[in-house]
Image 1 (cartoon, rainbow, N blue to C red):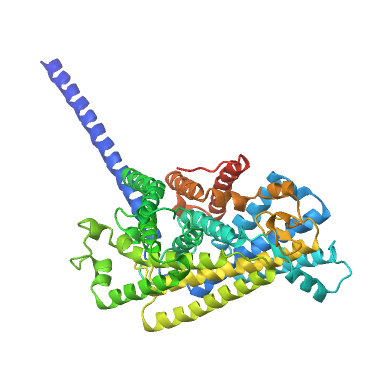
Image 2 (spheres, rainbow, N blue to C red; image 1 turned 30 degrees about the horizontal axis):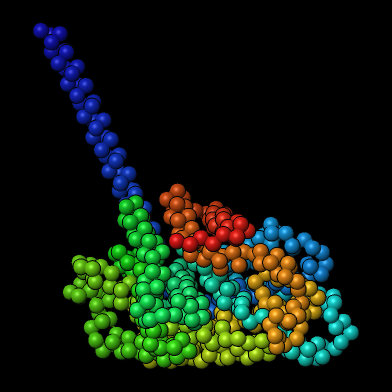
Length: 538
């Protein structure tokens, strides 16, 4: 009898131990889930509720990459005069990475408060390189500076390729790639993050700059895909957005399935930037069926003004901010994605402004002095827009990425034009340096022609055709060639790093190492594709 009791007591203790183990395992599972949820919420809070920085600070940061690219070109010219080490693809990749990527990483992180020191360093370095080139010039060695400048202004360039546009698109892509990962680390200044409601953040420009840069090289400017009826042309536009549909849906499914952190007020519950690009492409294609590209400025101004009037005098602004019921509801497709859907109007206006800029810049010009006038006009337009931005922000409404209002559109266009003008001026200075050194080659720069080309086939180029092909091996050309793949690759690797690394508690040294390795890997993959002469298309 006592044995039976003891046996039953043993079974009872066994059951209790099993029950405790099950409960303990369940509690551990719940704790892990809570930790995971809290980690997600912490990351979402880390990138939310920011007010941005000043327009001046962002403008200063935008012009720095143009100076770095100019220094990179001057270094290549001087190195070709002294030795030939810069001709290998491996060395060119290293130089391009150091001058294009590293400055953007440091400017957005550890040197964000020392922009003027960066400018001073780059300007002194560039001036030193230019002085050495001038002293070692192989052309017009005994001619005074004034006579050299007179001859330079008569020189012609190949007008089919505009290096400044390629550099604009690559700078914006590289900036976006750095920022989307850096924002998750503590060393990234919170003032550079995307703004919550009003203000201008550095990351806010990345979105608008991408739309502007894409518009400058859209097929409508070059009259591609516009043959046939308007219906056929629109069908081609529908066909061209397939990759964006794939990317947008893929991102939505992956983000929702793995529970990745999201900034809800950026685009909404389901919307993302790829969907914005799709809608912008289709709307602008419809508009350009009836308006010529060189009249796009009329459409851009009309859309922004009417949209701002709607924000001010209709319930549209209240709908964006608080939903249809006024309490921030996310029930229904419109309420769930109201920021992304309605702000598309602003991006359409930015796109049309980019089309206008592209149609002006891509006009055929031969002389350097014509390009000096172009750079001057774009710079003057940018300054005028910044003045307009100040007036609008004081008297109408402060810039808002969330609504893509009038002030936001003006800011994006003005900042894009200031970057483009700085790149054009850099190209002109670099062309003068190449003019002084016979046979100098710089990837992603103008090809100089000795005399005005009355007959394109008989125009005497300063470099041979074989050297031209060799000079195309550079990181800028590679990124411009596979820009969409680079953007997709950056998004994927950013997600993987966020899943594997505790970004919120990373040290400065560790964060810098991860950022540089991340950019180095992505750039190297794109560069290898370029070396193999491959363009990835969907």
